[in-house]
Length: 623
Image (cartoon, rainbow, N blue to C red; front, side, top):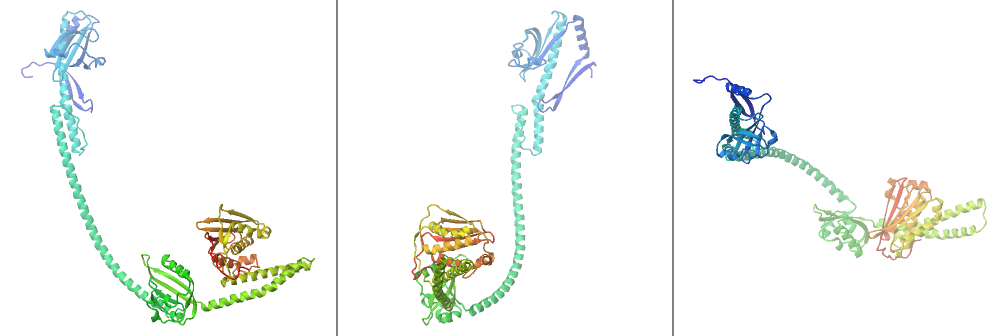
């Protein structure tokens, strides 16, 4: 170009890539003078014998003598003593003869790159005799090549030292621009690229902090805005709710007015019903001071209503029962807060005694505190007198019947010792069975009258209930075998003696067992169980048989009652057995209950106190 002579050159180029990212970082180009290269090759051909060739090796060695880069991969990592990096202290480019790591005598040209602490070496070995002009030419070519390679190496060093970090910094900047503040920039050192990287890191740190602060501020403002919107929504909702509430209030007021009118009408009806009631109704405060009484109290007690308001019933017509009665009454209504019902004897204003069916119940507030007591008394004096007359009549009639029946039974026993045949024996059996049924009926009637009149005595003594049950089962063996019934007895071990009247409880066991066998299906099992539960001894008798219809169960313990299916099964019952059982259990201080399903299982449960029955004086026992 310009005043220079035109030359023909050969350019050899190769791309340069980042070893990590494989990105293009540049192009390495080497130019060769065509004329000089031709003359060099011609000279080699003229001075080189047939079959001879040039052998050379190119490598880069560091300050410690370790081969870092080599054309022959086999020597990378080896340590070479010659040429030594110390030669760079004397000159940057030179030639040297030495023995290489393979033990061969070689000549080498080296070029020092002090900035990188490296030395580029091009060594060669000739297979022809030394001393010719070829050696010189090769040495010159080697030097030129060493310089070219050295320049290329330095170029690579610059590229890798400056360009590659700059590319990394550029990519780092791209990530930051995309708000990826987690990106890392791994460039260190005191070079310009290192300083630039550190500045970038500092800038990103500040930018990250500013972004975070800005984001926090945005979040805060957003939250405040949401809160304001919520308040606005709440305010609007409150206004709408207030509107609805106001409408509802007016509707409620209207509804309450209707309810008040209806309640007022109901109260008037209730007042009329209370005022017209034949039962004496009294309302007292928690201290039994009368607050209200209906008109029926006047003809029940003989006191005017205005006389009794503000006074205690016990100071007027009450106080004629024993202490246990009143203790039980107050425990039930005041402590247990339950209704109390029992017959009570009182005196009218004129001193006349009367009997009331008394019902008292506490009225509680929302906190469960008693605010009033309401009592309803029905005068049953006349009804009790009639009932007593019936009982006395039954007792008298039973006694009167008992004497001839006993005589009939005695004569029948005498006739049983005579020889009877045919029709005589048939008539005899009919008379005997009829007399037994009559005697049983009379005994039952006598027992009922004695219990109802309070004349029956209760005489407790220590008794093993299991022994009493075994005796009752033994007495019914004829009936049990006749119906092919199996009796299963299950007694809890270690059951103690219980203070009960054995005659009374035997009557209970015999009645329950007799019914269980009589109304069980043939060839089934009657289960008997006696065990303890807390402070009670429990007796259970269960069978599988006709059962008790659901519509008959409420009347099971009523006097003279028999269920329809029981009447079909046995036409000879009198309906007094279960009534007597209940009366005996209760007079013994116990309870009786049952469960039953028609044509399935029926179970009667007798619960007696472990402490035993209380003794009761009386002039007779069971018949």
